[in-house]
Length: 214
Image 1 (cartoon, helix red, strand yellow):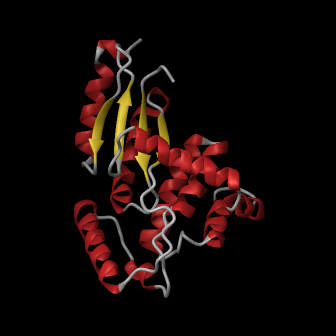
Image 2 (tube, rainbow, N blue to C red):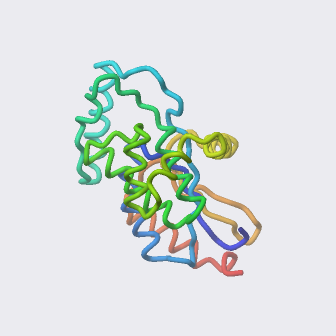
């Protein structure tokens, strides 16, 4: 993609990405097709198979409290209290990648939907049946979506995203990158959460630069 665009490194089970979701929504509203967003799954905790311990749950709920204070978004921490709950971010990421195969724009909306389901609605998005229900809600045939979630091809495609994130030097989420400029270079808009007014000011300035108008 040679036109100006954004690359968004995110994860459905990253609470600060959930906090950043209204910013992404506003970027899409303001810029539309003039500034497409390429979504890459970052791989927060893929493949985790150890149930969370009490201390880890309480620490994580504390982090979620910070996101709530910064953004006002709702949280329901009961999902973490489910017996045997493992904080495996891979199933949710696979679901986003599956949607992205058919519709990259819808994948951005579906990411937001997964985040709301997990953080605010007490839905376990590590459960493939829950993800299949959400896929059906988004317009996919439920059984086919459920089958795809367990397919080796989708697992490999999702892990390629993680590799892209690592090669790009991304160490935290959300990370938003913009480019190319007139010299073909990319630059980091933000590493981590920033309020929407700051992000939009940066992007408006960048889009106004003559070298990105080619």
